[in-house]
Length: 304
Ligand code: ADP
Ligand code: MG
Image 1 (tube, rainbow, N blue to C red):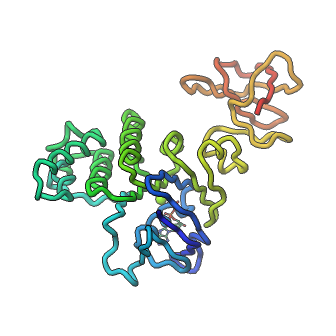
Image 2: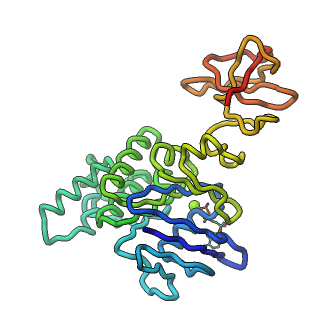
Image 3: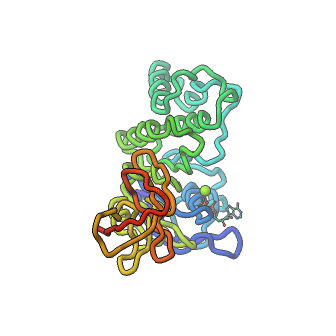
């Protein structure tokens, strides 16, 4: 179990993280979300031991994670990290980059593991391609496979799929997160992309103004977001008195209601349309099955 005990840290006098406290169990998937600059990457770096804490302690099982002041070589066998800057070996192949961290003592096992990891990140077609020939997204996938090669007990992922295009993202997420679960590898994923979280995270931590402002399961946070910042992570939403936060799909256009509004614009969303309406001179967003024309008067009801 990872124990982050009441840690405080700043690069200068300003606190970037203040009294952060949480645990991660073996095999658990924890998502850290928050706006850009809220300290997600910093938190992962502290867990990895890249900086010295101002206050608090971090433990993996009984071992304390120490910063550079107390630990000359950053990094531990049981923990791997895939950050936004991945340093791969450019002139060697994908397979060699991944295999480098596997023992040469059992060549067949090394070959089997390398193949398995290449499949997890869907790079079969590039196994023998030199890394410098790859796109940013492909490099990111090599970095993930390489981090998994040594069977860490905990993996830190910073915006892990940010360079990967939408054609492949969802399948890759399922592969990687299913692999981690199947092998009981705990992971902490820092992200601002809800698709990295929904369907995969056991728990979410929300960072804002250097603090944890919420910690709960994706389902509970989604159902009861409490704050606009949290709701905005999940979907388009409105704040309507006296209901509070109302997601776009919680408003229905109906025939007869006391709520009346005028259509401002319709945005195509694929499976549905996002209808922007003028309600008491403010914009409201409603999910609707078909396009509606600008100027149309509609009536709506709210069901939470
Ligand atoms: P996030 O990953 O959530 O976008 P970061 O952890 O990268 O946030 O940054 C948190 C804050 O710390 C920001 O205000 C950022 O400017 C600052 N920061 C990040 N890295 C450094 C650094 N190496 N030196 C000084 N300030 C930094
Ligand atoms: Mg970051």
